[in-house]
Length: 493
Ligand code: NOJ
Ligand code: NOJ
Image 1 (cartoon, rainbow, N blue to C red):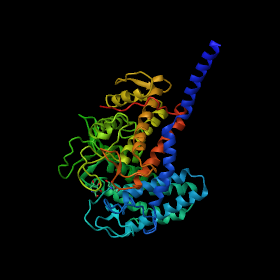
Image 2 (tube, helix red, strand yellow):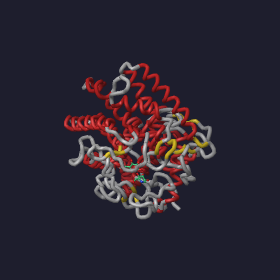
Image 3 (cartoon, rainbow, N blue to C red):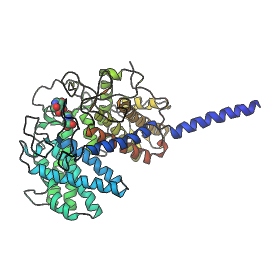
Image 4 (cartoon, rainbow, N blue to C red):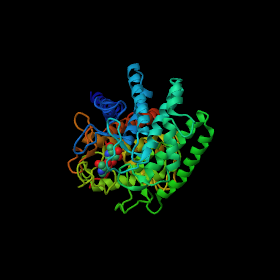
């Protein structure tokens, strides 16, 4: 009798534990629901009734702040996730909806390029009827044509892979002819000839040389070279590759040796009063360019070290990050930011920056798991030592150690990194509106959603982070479920 009940008790304890391990993927569950909300709300901002087909509004909000415009950057990033949805879709009705919106976007892009604007292809923003926006603005923003090229190259390659509408690819998207008269070629030529120029950053504030901009310019050149080669434009392929090499070499200037940080802006045209040198744009640049195995890939120690230093910094400056009962850390654009959407009084954490940190860490974990090896360096050790504390495994990582797939330390570190990534998602979940909608910012004191409602780019950032998480989990089956039961906060003062 005694034994029986003891056995029963143990049996129950074990089954509770197994149950928790297989069922408790709260982040995965939230992301699944949020992805479908994000998809619906993202599409509500594309080709809306009072806009031209292909127009992506940054947000439906028209006052305080008025984001009812077409930003080339926001649109390119959004349409790149529509391409992702298209590739992943199985339902033919959804597939054709996605494809139509990609064609609308390509056609609108051609119209934008042919519309006279104040800064030509570096023009950041258009009205929702597709006409030029000629009021004062921070221009040019040279990440924009690079991002547009990246998205449309992806679309062109997809059409070529499917053997569908090859006529359209040749007539509209890419043709060797010079001066360029196709959409992708125009942007590639612009990037190839102007990447050295100073331009405004993605936050539309500083004239200078920006890591984010350079990263996406380099990506456009690399992908452009491959497409040119695919279509027999050999000379252009060589030229674009050479630009990519030069950009890569020049990126070294963004690495600050004494601090270990990748710095967003150098060569600034004025004093920016940003002593921290930190900016989440660096992580966005890594995510949006997806390089593998180099100094600027998601798993590089420069990137992970910067991410960790920024996490610590942001956790100390926003009061919502000091509440020990909340998971993860809310991340802002940069520590000195004062733009709250309506006024310049105090800056807040941003949804898309916080999601970008999650996405980067999923990609890093995925990359480590594919390569089967992690080298601990002075730059990444602090992040690893903090991530491992999210698991039950006790380990102190020291510079010089090499971890190999199959080692307990390796497997646990991957798990820790994925849990660290999850903590950023949980933070966004904490502050999301109850209907799952997401505004640009989270108030740094109250945590409430603030500034532009239903920011399109936020929804794109949900979809890309969720995709990165899924890819990691699919290849690392051990981590199919991630346990958050002993969730630790990053710093609670
Ligand atoms: C300043 C903000 O920092 C920038 O991001 C924004 O686009 C412009 N103001 C216009 O609202
Ligand atoms: C302000 C942000 O700083 C910028 O990156 C974005 O393109 C616009 N808002 C529109 O969302």
